[in-house]
Length: 208
Image (tube, rainbow, N blue to C red; front, side):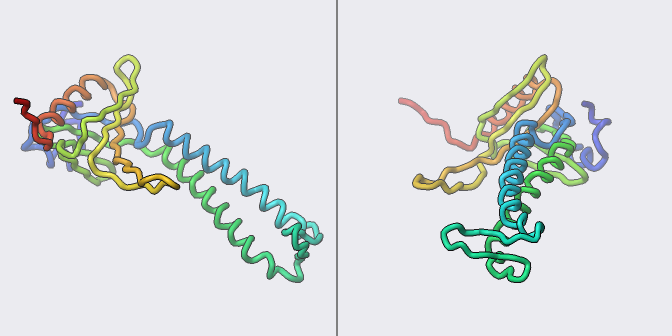
């Protein structure tokens, strides 16, 4: 992609820098991430639908519902007090499942950013918003998935967050930059790796 093909606002930001490459990503998120979230959302909704049927089904049939076989409490339209807490939990979890499902569908159709690599940073530009990441923030861990030099690249950053795990120490989850659906994958990865190495903040170890 030539400089003339980039949005005006993006060109103004890099006009004084040496441009290594410029590409337009096809999507914002990788397909595996989108489909994974969509599967989780659908499973959550399907699972909660069983509880909705068990708890609310008898009420809509003008029957009494049995929500706790151990206590055998009876609930009907005349007394919904015993339904408040379990009903609230079911509604919250169902809404969470719907949110994950619709958010995943939205992620699937989100268009990708413009990516521009310079000697000092990687620039992302999408819908008028710019995110600039210095090469020193990259760990150097790069994943490529490509066929015929077309595919996607994942860059691991030094930034991230701690994720709690049950009965185990917290796990550090690094931030990831996705560049999805681009040509010349291997050439771009090579240029990025050179810049990351040039700007590596880790001091070199001298062996005597």
